[in-house]
Image 1 (cartoon, rainbow, N blue to C red):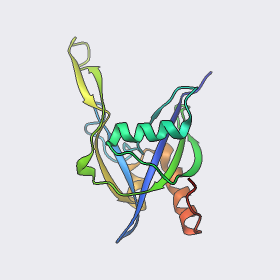
Image 2: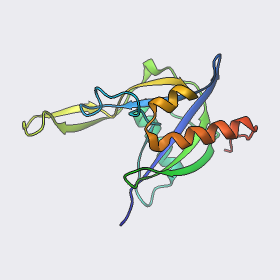
Image 3: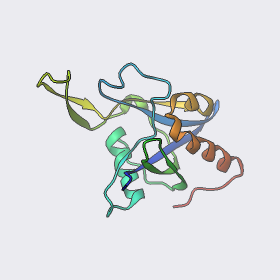
Image 4: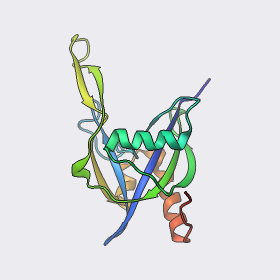
Length: 160
């Protein structure tokens, strides 16, 4: 069985409260009333011939409206419960979540109504402390936070 692949960027900054990460909330009716465990790093699937870091940069821009150029620190890929492999890179930066601009997808809603509606891929973003991000982030991606915290604590620098 061929597993799907996804690539994303974990944007971080050092704020007054310490290390903070940018997470996004998926748009659409299925996620509208979910919060803890529903957020994600900006990420998306990519084609076999596409380079993963380039895909991560593209997906970040599609989901936030912000272009991130690095330097990037490769994180250990994580496999989600459904089998998808997520490759991620950390990058230091800043972004005002109020300026978030996401691409949209089309979905029949309500189901079996024949009505097709547009929904944003992500409907909001926010900066979270690591403790809060652990609660907000989907369980399969939490290892990315742990690795980022470990690597920044020992002074490892991001690579271009």
